[in-house]
Image 1 (cartoon, helix red, strand yellow):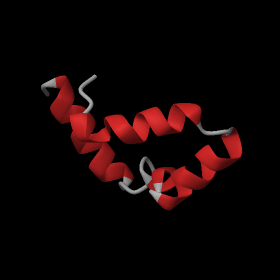
Image 2 (cartoon, rainbow, N blue to C red):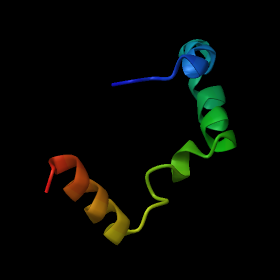
Image 3 (cartoon, rainbow, N blue to C red):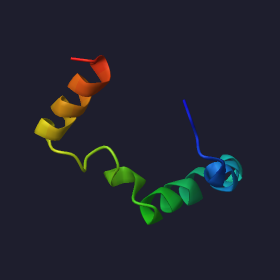
Image 4 (cartoon, rainbow, N blue to C red):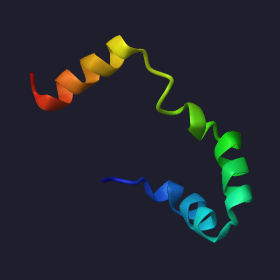
Length: 53
């Protein structure tokens, strides 16, 4: 999986934070909405594209 170099500091910080602070950081960056932001139709189109269909 490709991870942009610009995220390295954030990922390192996330490793050393206690769970409560990690959750707060996730809410701050809206990571809880990351996977839920796309509609079912958009997800289906994306899945078809990555499968090469």
